[in-house]
Length: 88
Image (cartoon, rainbow, N blue to C red; front, side, top):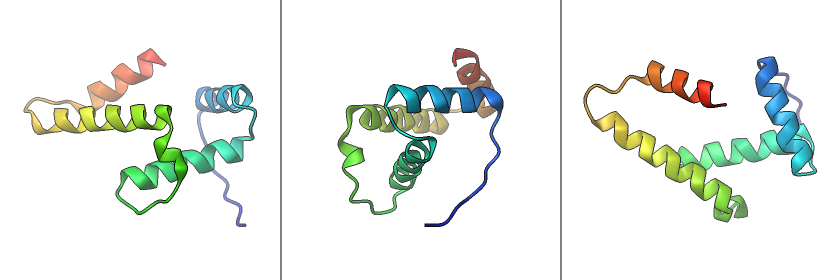
């Protein structure tokens, strides 16, 4: 298994650690799961049972709703990101 070093903001790392602790798993396990979901959303074939989890299904639903906003005029991606950051 390969190792990868990434840099994330402190607030992001705190959230990763909180979720990992809550779910009794390591940072690496959590990030691997997040990547599997990301690849599945992008359309890559995945046989992962993670896609059947309610939380993953909700994330996919949110992503689909956001995609629908893109088709309308006047959507501001920067404003959307700022709005989400304020809610974290």
